[in-house]
Length: 352
Image (cartoon, rainbow, N blue to C red; front, side, top):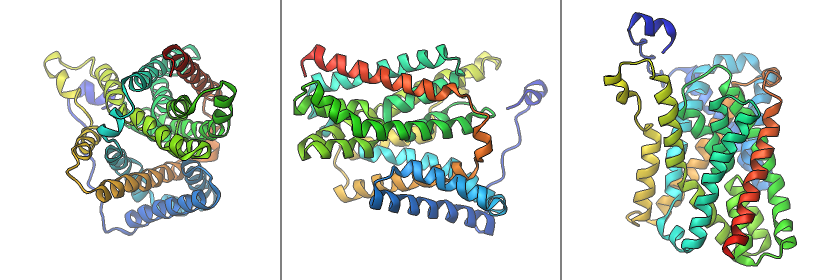
């Protein structure tokens, strides 16, 4: 709601429903789907991070075919918003309570403590480097939980601001690069620190940003390390709900500060996609669904998020990135270093 709406005391008109059968809508969604397919194939053939590839492809198509992206804007916009939220919701099917509890309470406590420390410390680091509060929350959540997926979820949960989507694109780019570097470097660091198999799995699962890179680093060490590292990572994914809910509560509460006190509670409600994330996690943990259904839903989440990132790339020009804050890369590097320091310190402090 803009200032004129608040002054007049009226709500903005609702947006028209998308025309599902219109060529621009169908063309835009199919274009995003094609980018996701190409990125997944590139990942399977060359091991290049899917999110990094699909984002670059989207930006490249926008640069090469501006008329196509302008014509298909309706479908691209739908994919970057509704499909994005659907993908985040389906991530809940990847969270299984039995797998998390099987790690043991010391390991569980280590991961939860490191996530909390990374979110709070990462937010403080970003603010010290003069990042806006919403971007600080997006970057800290991305580093603390699950890279690109968490960045998208946090960005979707805060009030819209001009430039935030462009900055979220940069967060995804930089975090994907940092995650790839961590996939290559953290196993070497684990050997240098003389960590045993459990300690190595904790380091990789608790300190690498994206799930795919956690798996790549863990299985490069051993199959057992890979399985345990991915399980540790799922604890961080499970933290997506409370962290993003907290962000939504704080920022939506701020945006409603000038509303009537009696109505303010209506503005502070959980986003639907996060409620669905929680419900899907509960359903999966109760083993009511066949394992194949949960696996298919988790895979669908990856495809939907890849398509959504492609849509964001289609909406972002290379020239727009020049207007982004140069300090953002430094912020994410500092947040990543802080996370690594916290995880290593906790591993040694707890003797894990």
